[in-house]
Length: 318
Image (cartoon, rainbow, N blue to C red):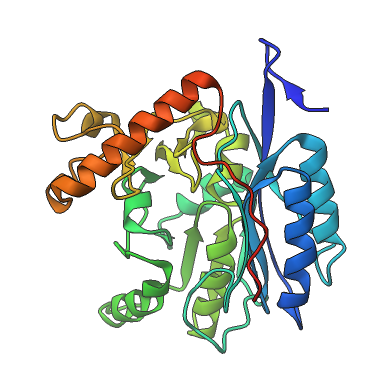
């Protein structure tokens, strides 16, 4: 049975998950997993690689639980612990199960992601990052950091996670005294699994990462005690969330797929469904016209109570 809100409308369970394990043949997992998701009207994206599984899916509670149980039955996935949120509307348009070389791309092929740093529970995170001997690094992309970050954290200003190794090596080389203690964090924890393993391989003696990522911190740490500033960007139609995983104030630009702050939404260069101040001058008149027409159609479908883009497709053959 779906969970209902106060008005009796169905609420969708959103499950963010990952697991580093060894899949000898990810392609053999892809078909049955895609068929199960599509058959249960679950939508979202799941990535499969030899190093494990990663993704976010949404659907009715029982459907999501069935998919999670299927994944837990895969080799090494019995300890899968997804993060759950709830949405009044389906946050994804379709279901995709894709094969990848890495479930999160760092570009260090010899790295063992299971050799990660020391987990720090959300309740203990404030004390760790307040220690003057600890350097705190945000491992996320630049546009994510712009939405919110922990007070005093370093922003590598990387455009993608695969830029992190080069940034770290350059940054450490420029220091007279390299730090012995480094704490890192990301949205849900997966990038820190890899980045802390990378730092250990680079010889950093004490490496820590936030268990469950920013999402667990925002869910568990009361706002008056929080050292988080701003909102947390998420890779779905919610765009961003705040403390308690409440809906954020950011929108998603349909032109460049970047988050748009309330201040940017007030700009005359922001046109809903078309462009934002960051991409306004980069889009042609033809692109804007096509985007405006698509947005008009989407609004019309919304008034009719149907999805504008909602077809559920099985995974393509590998």
